[in-house]
Length: 353
Ligand code: NAD
Ligand code: ZN
Image (cartoon, rainbow, N blue to C red; front, side):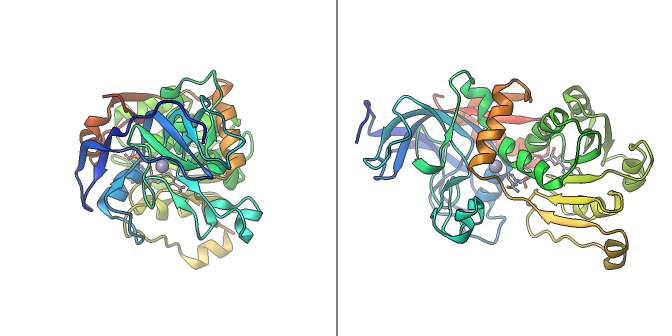
């Protein structure tokens, strides 16, 4: 196993019980197994998924104690003896999909997020809210040298996920796309990818801070779900012919906007469900869905090719979404703001403080 000097202990933010809080403390550094690499995480984005994991919002249990985080950007410091294509010193990222079997029918068709044996960073295995994190070499993101590790971190989940969701939406250049939850981490980055793809974006979220940010990032219009009296009509009115957007990608953390999207997309429109609010259901009238030929689908992170492509958009300077950086020791405060819906864009944590 090739390696550089690695400490035996490190700082981490640990969920000790479901419901939180995270405890900032020293824990041992693990060494990589034969097919794994160890990454010295410099920065990690904070995704709403990390909060869902801590709160136990979803039907699958997390490991406990748990080190969350799955937008970790850093430097490879050790690799197992089977690893040939990740170099020590390379810039690499820990993403949600930490590993997969690489041998099932889904992995064989590059649908590895659907692998039944997938390992999930910050959920079923420890993630990037620590200074040294492990991932399967086959799945680490290769971060181009010229990318700033702090700014690129949110691409590792938010970027990959919305890039994939945009592909799944099948929206074409010139068409109208609604981004629901546009002022949050995924949404703000989705605006930039959608703009780069030539789509006309209707941003939907709440409050004037998020409005200003969405319009600055390139949204064509903004609908405020907190003040709109008839959201479906207001969204439709943002399209040139009044028929509604061709697609909606829903990254909001409430149930209602999923229902609304099935109503305001135009006939033959697509609703891509990506947000994962606790205990939520999606329902739409069957009659309307059939006669208007509405397509309702889910989209879940992205595969390794999506990862490389999403990073390439970033490297080319097309994705510049706002983020704020605080110390890893301040993660509980970030979660509080996130719970209250007060974060415009993304928070990044610096693992050195
Ligand atoms: P975030 O908290 O940064 O953003 C969510 C946004 O939704 C906020 O700006 C909030 O104001 C907005 N919102 C809430 N209610 C709304 C409503 N009724 N209408 C419009 N907007 C509304 O969260 P995030 O990190 O961007 O994550 C969003 C969701 O996506 C989470 O549930 C997360 O778990 C999920 N997620 C899914 C995938 C996937 O693969 N499908 C990947 C990553 C994250
Ligand atoms: Zn995420």
